[in-house]
Length: 472
Image 1 (cartoon, rainbow, N blue to C red):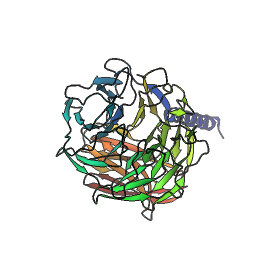
Image 2: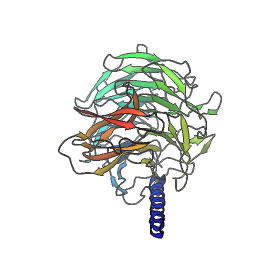
Image 3: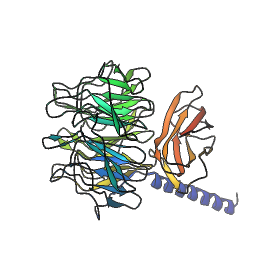
Image 4: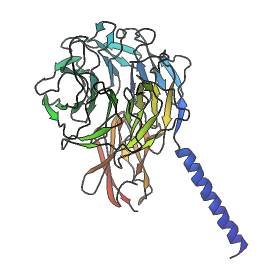
């Protein structure tokens, strides 16, 4: 073999080495601090946070006093804009907040001995507040839950300092009206429980009633106004102050606390609503047991972070893959300070942690966690396309990763789901409100068998399916 050929082969090897190295650098997880500069809200706990599709809105909570201030954070520019207090709800904490696709709705909460059944709808574009009706609204309360169904908000449970509630109501922001929910077969009254929206139903689980912690729950169908019980067979042990996420096909419960045995849990469970069955989450490489932490769903993984672990605040976390039932730790390099009572939102390509308290007082600083291997939704263009479209994945065939590109022509919820040949849902890659533009998401097929798979994009009335081939 000539020396020239040897030299060319050596160059190819070097290039491949550098491509691999650069790829690893850009795929590494990282933390970056959020700005504490102009218009950053004062540090606080017991506040709320929502993701609008492009920005995070912080509101309310407790710092040196209870507040009705807030701010809008843009992670692209790392800047804050103050939200107006004109016509804002009265100062409060332990309230709930949902994002409708265009507005944030605040409801309930507490300030000292005052409990609220009032709220407000906030338009971040116009920076204005509009009060929510109190006619037919649930009794004043805090430590309740709220979910957004796509058209309405459902609030349930909570406490008013004297009474624990198993009541709730459905709020329609278009008509500014409330409709009471049935209590027939509803779960027992409680606080510190969790609630997720499946796309058609709300699932309530766990929490604390007047005397005990529960491992019971209920499934509420707003169309029929009916409750059905969640099985306790193989359910996680009774607890509150845990977290819950919806994967697109299952609910994942993790962590929490039970004062009866002073236990901080590092256990959890996956609940399949279609079969009413539980399966345990792995405890191999799991984060330390904790409560008052946060959890977000990336589209393929659950990230838990922070919280109180055996009476110590932590800044550690873990990434759970429900397909492989495995955990990996989040890096603590440049991570925010340890804390509890903070908030977390998931964006198209990062998780944002903000606020909370670590025993030294309310925290103003937060952090943006990026991990391209698990948070794969990237907006590659903000130009408004002529229409919705789902492009062919590339490479195809692939092993084990492939990229899927799609275009969104109008703001709203977009859902990208992968199915196998039998029509079984394999993984939800995207399920969130997106602004117009072109997006790209990575599909990791390392946990799946070789074969033909289908991916489906649903956005408004748009529905398109394409085929991809995994070859190992």
